[in-house]
Image (tube, one colour):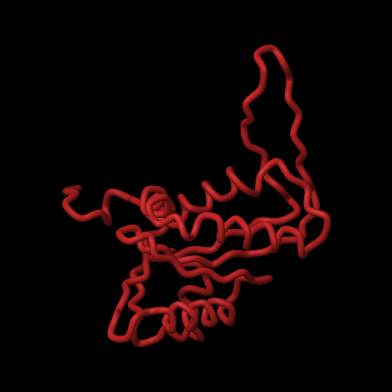
Length: 169
């Protein structure tokens, strides 16, 4: 599980261009942002997500409640996440069917969802200009809805060695 910030302060990525040409891309510099919370099971490709205006304990609690309700009755998940302030807050309400496993500090490479953010930003949200606040929110939702049904793609993107069965580290 992790959150990603995206919005009007866009990102640029490499683009294909004819040899010898100098392609130009757009980069917006405004600071309006949207946030996407997501959790992905790298073994099945199942996922849960929430678009939000803020990252804080209240929104994290809403995400956990939504994810908890989406689980099959009797199912229990271990949610891997970093130690962001809203993840370790005393106000965090963790449902009974979710156990949190905190990553060591400064180890984003261990979080499977970090790879999903890189994919979504590079394939859907980079080299663009957003007209207003609602535009990046819509684009983020569209990007996630494009990726979410592709379970094999999500499994491939989020497969980290330490979590995959049969891998010896």
